[in-house]
Image 1 (cartoon, rainbow, N blue to C red):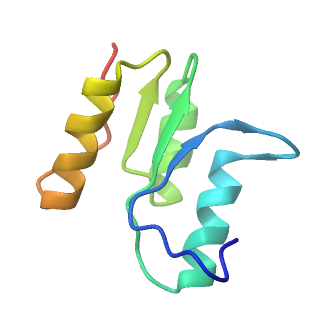
Image 2: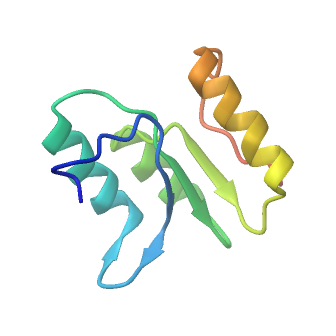
Length: 91
């Protein structure tokens, strides 16, 4: 799928079948050879996971469940270029 689709701000769950969201984001970045703004969803993110996500270039780790309106606000901020740090919206 990454051969034909170049997402600008993918929303990934941390727990994906057979791989985690960190590795998936790393692979998207590697294949696109550019920085992208990934958003990762996790039921109970730890502080270590947030640090690992930042190292992978993921700026936003969001606690599930998330309201669609909150996700929409975050995505609008990303596309407007005003989101500037790692955030847990539901803390």
